[in-house]
Image (cartoon, rainbow, N blue to C red; front, top):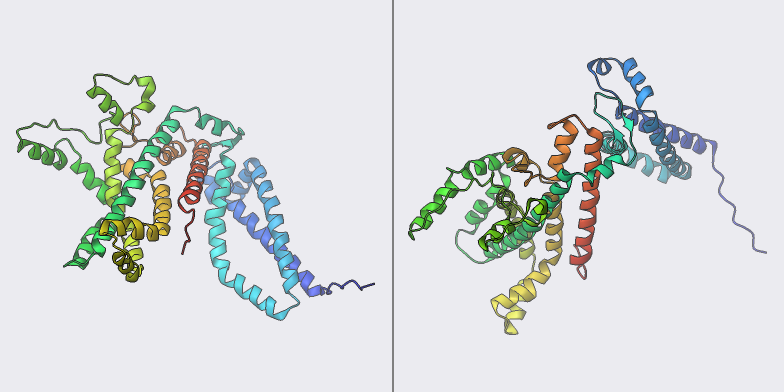
Length: 411
């Protein structure tokens, strides 16, 4: 019979190193969890470690217990890796050098990203107001989210925002990139001018557009002046204060109206579409640069071959340019969708979710609920809304990649 291969013996030093690695991992993770524990906040706790630990004992034991289980599992994997590599000098040096280099990044990420996410996920199952002790409520926050009008309306608004803005900015970015890639004079000058809005502060751009959108602002003035050339009049619109929906306005043209209980049939409001135009203006240049770089990477021989085959310029665009840009289109669609679903600063500065909630977005809803802007502080409920939005973004992004990326090789 063939002899069974014997396992190499593990030295006592390897076992000791594995034990030390396990202990270090568990201790570090528990300290990070302790720093992110949900406690009842007050100034005295921040000044005294003893009072802080007492609050942890009273309010955060379940959280620490869950983190402890995860820490033990991760510690066992770390101990196993150290035990296998310790008796091999080459692997041991690589292991120590590798983790030594990434240790600062790991500590920062675990403390300020992973730890905070675990804290937020835990309190999403509690009723927690920062200054009160977390009270376990299970899935009540998640059930409440899908039965609350404001959150449902914020999802409805951001759906229109993402749908219109993402596809519009992608189409405009491709058009501008093709235009700036063509032979022309002062090409570098136009590239710089077109890209300028992307390097400007979002706050500054928003405040400028708020000024332009006033009833007495330049948008109404330019429209009134243009129509005046043809003898027509223009009633100024409060662009950021008009709650009328697009489909509601179209229905009014035919003498009908949409009842208030069917608010979801009214379409995006004038205020929301104004924010869309502002967002498109600021994001198109960034994606234009990405498409421009991709266009310059296309081999001119491909266009020469298409021209020899008799393809016109329009046919070359549809049959050559767009297919070769498909990987970048996937990237732009994904980035644009994620950005639009997380829109916040423009809403916060320009409309604060109004009028009548027609510009309310999920991130702004999380902000107001978690920080108590319109009522009591609800950190638990706000965290639940944030995780629901994260799941929605993941699903939409996954579907986009599966549909648009099909048959495409990314590089």
